[in-house]
Image (cartoon, rainbow, N blue to C red; front, top):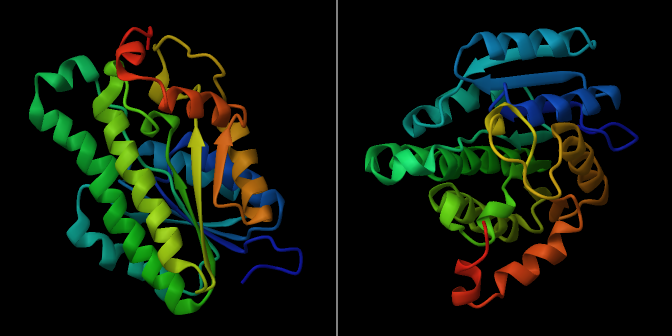
Length: 251
């Protein structure tokens, strides 16, 4: 349960080695989060993240989880909820893919879609059901501004995030009034390992800034946050551009 100050006591991260997830966990541990579950494929990165958070004083566990194995999601995540209530679930996994390559390799494009969308649908529904059963908790879904309107340069990734965003919004509506809160987070270009080597986009942000926005959104029980916030107005304009004009943009 959340403490007297409204801070979550327990956190489950799906995609436990994510830089945004680790940055968020650091902030929450500073606000008295004491138990953290990092769910992801076994890797040195996952163990390093667990060690970093343990050094901050949290009790940290790792659990084997693969977004591409939806048949195993209920068993893997069920073990976490069987240990006790989870106050906050952070769905933070995803892959960018390689647009130029994936256009000519449909199997690779499908892998991006399965990771970012179908894997998230499966894991999101499993966690939502568990949160609803316990009667409280928040589910934070890391979406992207790329899902607002698919660009020529990354429409495979963008379309997967568009599906994820629509799913998360609908799930939030379905859970309204149950005691479970869903927060959709839409960052712009985030400077991270995933975007290393790519040209930096305007209004680029950092994992730390996204983590701060997540924490603020949770305190306000917001349903959607943009990082940075001014992207909301920018993307509203982009979303309504006529397609002939949109095609001419250098994006």
